[in-house]
Structure formats: C-alpha cells, structure tokens
Amino acid sequence: MKALLPPRIDLLSDTLTRPTPEMRAAMSAAEVGDDVFGEDPTVNRLEEHISAMLGKEAALFMPSGTMSNLIGLLVHCGKGDEYICEAGCHIFNNEQAGYAQVGGIAVRPIPGERGLIRVDQLQEMVRPDNDHLPRTRLICLEQTHNRAAGSILPYDSVAEVCTWAKEQDLARHLDGARLFNAVVASGISAADWARHFDTVSVCFSKGLGAPVGSALCGPKDLVKRARRYRKMLGGGMRQIGILAAAVLYALEHHIDRLAEDHAKAQVLADAIRRAPGLTLQCDQVDSNIVIFEVDAELGTAKEYCDSLLERGVRLYPISRQKVRAVTHLDVSMAECEEVAEVLSS
Image 1 (tube, rainbow, N blue to C red):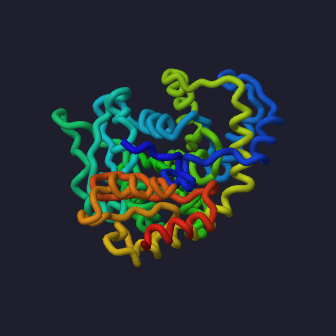
Image 2 (image 1 turned 60 degrees about the horizontal axis):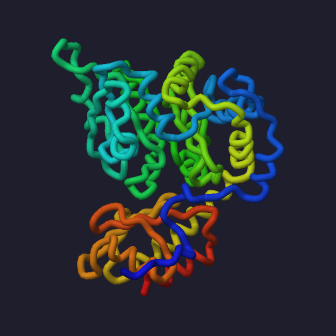
Image 3 (image 1 turned 90 degrees about the vertical axis):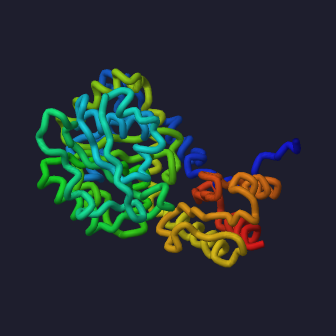
C-alpha cells in the first residue's frame, strides 16, 4: 500500500489550530494557582470575562466541549429525565451518549432543516405528567450547526423556539462550540444569542485557536453545581492559568479574524459549485464549514479524500459519499485558493 505524506494543507478541522507565537508568550507569562481551590487568578479572570461577554452570572472553565455539554445536561436533568434536540446535533451524535452513560438521561431527537427545529415540530414533544413516561426537562440547540455545514440558526427562530420552551417550563441549553463564528457572521452579539438560554457552552480550541478548553456559562447556582460535576468527572485542574491565558489572548485577538475563515470557505464553496461530480450539501455557506457530496463515479468519499491527500490536501470523509472541509487560522487564503484549484480539476 502506498504511504501518504503528511498533508501540506490540512482542512480536516478547525481543532487543528496551534498557538501563535504571541499566544505562547501570553501563556508563558501567565500567573497561576490551584484552580480546584479557586485560586488560579488567570482562570478566575477568564471566567469573569467570558460570563460577562455572554451576559451570564458565572462561568466554569472546562477541559473540553464534550465535558461542558455533558455537565450542561446534568445540571438540568436527573436520571430518567429527557431532553429534546435536533437529530443531527453534536451532543446526540458525537459525544458518546455521555448523558445516558453518566446521567441516565434519555433523548428525543427531532429531524430539522439545516440544524433548526421549528415550534410546530415541538408541539407534541413534551411528555405529559404520567408515571409511565420520562420527564421532558430540556431543549438543546447547536450554533453554528456542524453537520448542517456550519449553518447559522436564524436569530428570530432561535428566539421563538426558546420562548416556546420557556412557556413549557423547559430549560434551554446552547452548544455554542462555534458561537463566535455566528457572532461574526451575523453581527449579533454573543450576549444577545445567549440571552435565550439558561446555560451556554462555548469552545475556545476551534476557530479561536486556543490549544484547549471550553466554558459553561449560566446562573451562579447552576455553575456551582457544574463545578461539583466537573470534579466528579475528573475535570478539576490545577495550575491551568497557562491555558486560560491562551484563551484570554484568543478572545482579545482572534474573534474578528473569524471573518477571514468564512471568506476562505466561500472560495472552496465556489470551486465545488464548478467542479464536475461534486455537490454542496448546503448551497448557502454561512461560516467556516463546507460539506459536499461526491458522485459515485468518483468513488467513495474516503477514496476521493485519499486522492486529494496524494496532492497534499487533507479533507474529512464524514460518510460514504460526503466530505467536510473546515477553514481555520493555520490555513491561509492562498492555500485555500490552491485547494480550490485542485477541487475544480
């Protein structure tokens, strides 16, 4: 079997980003302490900063978005409770059903359109108070929506769903792994997106370019409960101001530049529209994720990606015929234009 060289241009995911030299300098200079005891000043500053950005009372720094989302569910749901989500969302598909393994929580997924579920789909989804049934406690949305090619859920639709959920006495949790992509693309502030949700998880190690970390933001009482769950799950960390400093740098310097990643994605999307045998999953590309289908005549998605890798380009086969490309700060516009030429040919 032919050995493939490491890719020159890697669009596998925006999680591949590496700390910039300036970010490394901030990490090196960080003041640290024991965060389990609440004594890391840089972490405390980060938690105050991100909670203020989202208009929430408090925040908790987490090692990963998976843990942040899981704890977001645990603070709202007990064993035997149920949450509602869109069928393609990351929490349901890509986080190993931790809600069931750890929390004994059930899920009711509803197929949406471009990641969005509508109020008319939800009307019969809240279980009645009956000893035979799980208790519906929570609704979860994802922004931007990964499997829907980074689509941005329309603000008015998000508000409508969350208002309806509140009227049903349901809690609301947002998986905001790429929330800041939605902020930059829409011009709507993080606080305005977050105001419709009780808890919001935001990730720092994707487009923002920090090496690790997420945060769960919400009311003080829920964040206090979240801290206990974080400790139980092994997420209590010690001198992590080094990591928090990277996040603070990213929040100060890397939000506005997400627009560059969106522009790069448009270059790829335009090439795919021209390319024979390739079809965009969503013709409208909202942010930094492009998903396209490969005609069977060109082989499977994996075979197609293997052929690209021989030319130094790595994309991600996400199903038998679908491929994902994600732009990020470690891939330049010139490199994306080079990939566009390869795709077009």
